[in-house]
Length: 231
Ligand code: FES
Image 1: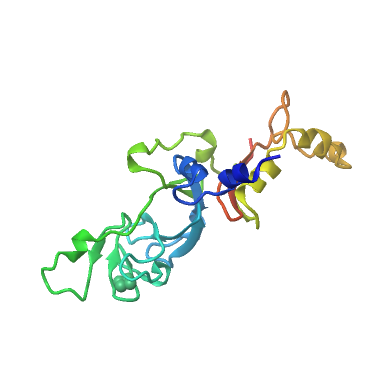
Image 2: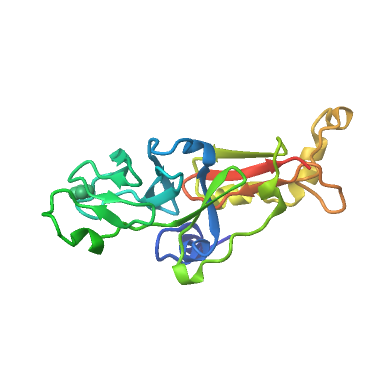
């Protein structure tokens, strides 16, 4: 049984927390690629590791992932206009590109250099396996994107999915990673043997994996993202 103090360390993932710092050193599944289908389409709000963010696909198809609230007066950039290679705030019209650089401040006089000095917090993204991944840690520590073979599976062999679980990430991890569960519970599902339901991917040492389940229960606030791949 964890102490209250240890539990606090485990479950908090916001900026500056121990687990938050750890998770920010990895590429995290952020949203499905299908959630941003169109260039200049509607921006999407997401909450990741306790941070409110907005994702958008710009005119060139590049993915931006910015802090949701505008660095000027904190309006929501999720309500902004996604146009001409940037996200324009609905309040005073400042516009930010996918790197968070302010590229336009329409109320400033011609020749003003304010835009150059302004940035929104932005995170690196990578598209693979039908998902958009985010790196939220220090830029100088950014690891190369992992080369897992299931990230390049095509033709129905890979099914990206997203589940909403109304719980802390630690509960989701615990619920999907109990080693004895397949042996003592799933193996006793009535009719499993008769119907030849393949469960081996979840379990069990020595068995051949037919459906490896890759669950990324690393997003807080109940958002679990992952893949089912069919070997
Ligand atoms: S609050 Fe966004 S431009 Fe002013």
